[in-house]
Structure formats: C-alpha cells, structure tokens
Length: 550
Image 1 (cartoon, helix red, strand yellow):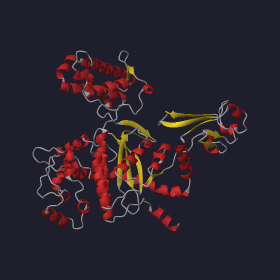
Image 2 (cartoon, one colour):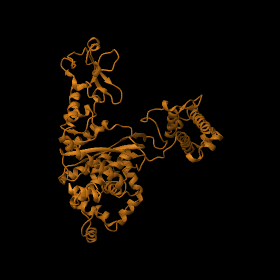
Image 3 (tube, one colour):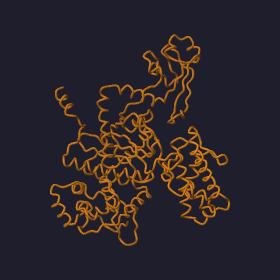
Image 4 (cartoon, one colour):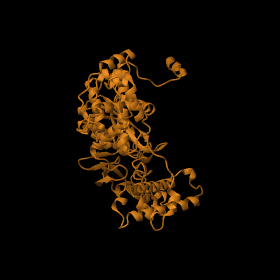
C-alpha cells in the first residue's frame, strides 16, 4: 500500500445520493460514517506505506475494510467482493459507485505490514480516540474485564500423530529447499511412514503396535537430525524452522537418541513449554475447570457506565497457560497509555492478588473483585486460630499470638511456587507453643511451633481489607455489574468468531481480536445512536409471571 492519497473526508456525491435513497433510515455503515467520520486517515499509517511506485489503495480504507471484514466474519475474497458490490461499504469507504475495488491478496499484505511494524494496537487506539472526541467514551468511569479461551488454528493430535506429522513436515520442507541433498540421505522407510498426512484412524490401535511405530518414527527423526547436523551438512539445513521444530519436539517427546523410547507423562515438559503441533508452535494446551483446549486466551475490557455505550477499551491475547492475575497490571498499563484508566475495575477472582491490589491503589483504581480466601485449616475450622487472630507489629517485625506470646523469627524471602512473590516467614518459640492450651486450635505440627507466612505490609493490609469488604452488601451490589462482561464474551463468540483463531501465531490472533473489539464497538455505537435498548437476561413466561407477583 502507498500513501500518495490525501485525506478522504468527502463521500462522492453520486455514492451519497444512491446510499441515502437506498437506506432512508440509515444502516450501520452509513450511521457510523456520518457519526464518526472516516475514523482512520492515511497519515496514521504513513510509516507502513511504500513511498515510491504507482499509487495503490489508501491504507486508511484498507484498515477500515479489515474492520468491516471482521464485523461480518468474511473471508478476504468476500471482503474484497463487498468493496466492489456493496453500496453501504462504498459509502463508508468514500468510494465512487464504479470503483473496481482491489485484489483480495492486498488484505493479507496489510495484516503483514501491521504486524511487522507492531502497529496492531494503533488500530484500537485510533478508534478509541475517535470515540472520545465524539463524546461516547471517557476515562475514570467503571470498567470490567474477563477472559475466554480461543481455539488455535490446528488439529488436535495424539502424541504418536504429533511426532509422525512433525517428521513429515520436516521432510516436506527439506524436499522443497534441498531435494538433491535429501535424496542423498533418504532412508526408504521414511517414504512408507511419512509420505502422507498422518491420520489417527490410520494408526495402529494395539498398544504393542503403537509402541513399535513410536520407536520407528523416533529413530527416523534422530537419523534426519544426525544428517542435518553433520559436520559436512550445509548450515542452512539445520537452520530451517521445520528442522528446529523437529529437534524440539523430539527433545520433549523422546528419551534418546541411543535407546529410543517415549518419555513418561510425568517426564514431559509443563504445558507452557510443550509443543502440540509442528505448524502452530505458539498454541498451548490448557484446562480450566471442565474446559480443555489448545490455543490462546483473550482478555477483554469494556466500559460499563449506565449513561454511555459499553465500549471495548483493551484487548490482551495471551498463551492459554497464562494466569489471569498476571494480566491485570498489563491491562492497567495499556489503559493508562490511552488515558482511559477506570475509577472502578470489576474483575473475577482470577485477576485479584495482593500485589495487584496495591498496584491498582497506586493508580487510583478500585479493583473490585473477590480475593482468594485464606485456605489454611485454621480458617476453615470455626474454632481455628487463623491469621486474623494474630496481631502484627510491622515496625518491630514481630507477631503476637492470641496467648500473648511473641514470635522469635521474622525472615523475608521469596515464594517460588506458582506466581513468584515476596513473603515473610514467621516462627514462634517452640517452648511457648509446646504446652499452650490453644495449641489444638493453632497448629497441627506434632512437636514444632506455629509458623506462618505473611506478605509485605502493604500487600497484607490490602488483602485483608479486600476480604473484609467482599462480604458486605455494598460490595455485592457493586460487583453485580461484573457479570455483564459474560454477555460481551458471548457476543464476541456468537457474532464475531472470537472462539476460534483465523490465523496461526499469537500475533496474528491478537490482530484478529483487536479487529473484533473494534467491530463490537461500531455495532454498539450504532445501537446507542439508534436508541436500541440493551438486551436483558431472557426469562421464561412463568418466571416473568412469578416475578411480577412478587
């Protein structure tokens, strides 16, 4: 794309006349164009454009086409056809009626340029700035966030199918770039096992037969790796991405190379590192409650003030294995960069931790979400002496127990289990605890004293305050609005294809999610202008009758 074109604020007269006659009451595209203007301008993408050569399509128009494409879940070919054929699209794009459009391949090029420049966030930022200028969005209101799973653009493979397809992928790649070299090192058995796509229903069913095939494919892979890493092999053989993927998957799946056998399941890498496909190397397997999937996660944030449209303000795409709590501060950082930080941020338990509560307070954000409860046995027992029963003297670095005894050890450290965080290890004197009448309610240690772990003072106090607050009626009334984000996730999945990645790679998937968020914003702005009321939770006729009589 080039940037020779000027800003294109004016819709051609013939296009405007035809569209206004065809849509006397307006439609989404006409209304958005009339309300928000062109949204994108060519200078917005000047750094992504080719500044020499013949003039091509305006980058601002192409950016809008990407949004419209995701608004209607169109393929590249269908989106290019809509530019040629749709009157409302021509109006929104400010095109002449006889404009022939462009080749569909240009859209792929636009996505590539956006990703290469790291400019995908720019699309959402420009749209949000436009909405602020239109008075439809403001900072320091109320927002809410949640996540949902995204299915990767890949087949789900068993371990045997994975190694078989990985070997085939490497051979296909080498056959294209170095056919003569591959023929010189070819084992005839490779053709039998790796010439066709690996399908689970073609693989042996008996355990013994599968084991034999596992070993045979493993030996094939090690033989190929020996050949590409040989001293006399050209360097570009082992540098091929397909060969590097083969090497990594063999390291993860096999013990070898001399005594080739499967790694036990207990010996496999954690899911955050484990490759699940030779074609999509960023997707990871994850499980959340009853849901298991291979792919990514998307975290959406939206405004939820009653007096304005509910608009998407931030999108995060993370590996499926990323804990939600690790994303909260990233969301706040991106909102701060756009000057759209909320006063109240409604989230579920997964986004709340003591260090996040402190960081939010420092940005004047009220993070509204249930903190994890104390899961110690003392907290679960009615008579148990949990952390709330102890007095902490932070200046003296001492803890006083309900019996009046003072701790003897106060050791700062780092908890490396799960999320890395600072802690303070506290211990009481064994002599004080040994014959204490409160001991059965305090510790289950056979002979040792009571020990406990504290978070740093700010984090401890923030967490205790949050736990006290979340049982109040005022908190429950405020937190009730958080559930509305579930409807947004549902809208994204049902209407815009949020559940499945259209492309391979997290960067491309993130661009898809940004375009979906922009599309949702346009739909909601249109509904707001048209005064279409927000949908409410559906109720059966009987439920409505009972409610009316209550």
